[in-house]
Image 1: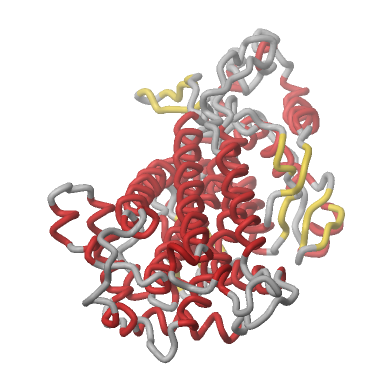
Image 2: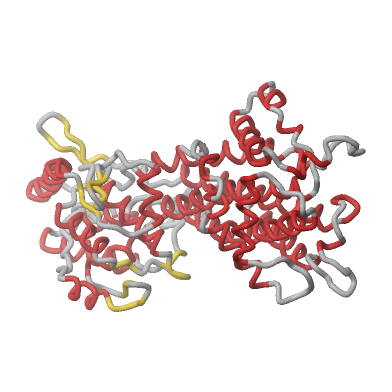
Length: 516
């Protein structure tokens, strides 16, 4: 929910629309006022446990196999700070600002549900750095997706301690300087707070949500470019007949077929070969688009449901619950990111398949025996190579995606001296989705260029009104390929249209019901 331009976070009630908005753009954040009493009660419960003196894991003991080691009260603050410093062992490229925003948002939402025992000060400081545009420098590698995303969340926590580096407006700077410039005091962690901050699946979930939102764009762009290829190849729209899909009953397939029918409706190119066309059936990459893209649609939506639950979840350990008048500490395993790993693995399948069928359509379009278009989509072939090697690039990326799509969730490796003996690998499973999405965006971009080229060869006939608009948008950025030229900038321009969601924006009303 939002008030004016400020996003009001109500713990446990975020929507996918909320998460997409945060992913897309920075904006001010505030916590719903009614969240504070439960946060304060949870923090008070921790202090009561410390005062009583009984050993409680994560509050006044060591961690992992050191859980039996009782820590004196005067060292509890040092314990929590040492935990963050020792666990900040990430490596690799830093996660993007968009992913950082999701991580901080979900960590705030989880802590604010009142089961983690942190003071309001901790949550308010996270909100303050978010609103100041201070993005923790979080390396993407170093988590196995169990016992929480310990290393990357430790790097997140360093920022509010005033340790290490952060990113402000895309530039790295020391955290102490960034906090001082924003008027934010570094925090000193109390009992339980360090562990609450670094236990949890927020990094895995944020990376997976990034993959989800990219997959949604790729799905839409792949349907638009696929429809344009259909007309460029003078394919048939008969396979999109609603009756065909209704008798199978798969919901994604039925919905996808309806969108394809609208995308190609009123095409003069289609009307030109309704009579006298000797072809009986199109290749699968044209004919089976609703079946393939509809199945992708279904698993993307399934992943979305899982990730939305996770975005609102409490995933640290241990947790505090009320048992009558008393607060009890319960150790569990919500930090195990198996649901996120499975969601990420299914998103990988969808992203790979969207690119795979797009590559097949490029291959069809450049093959004059199948498409009826000039060889390699260029005049004077031989002198000009046209789209020959652009297709090779698409093939290379489609094949690369097949390898990257191998499920991360089937792997595990024991850590922490076998205390943490089964892990999800969700962080890797989610992190690799960006590479796959980049690959598939290039493939769809090449298809878009190839299909537009085919449409141009059919002039003065026009494609459908929806697709003519897409074609016009592309031609504002990339001219007709009349002879060989430096091709990479054209591909990058088309890829950019895919990545920014511009293809589906051209036909926005068709996709309003596409995602939950």
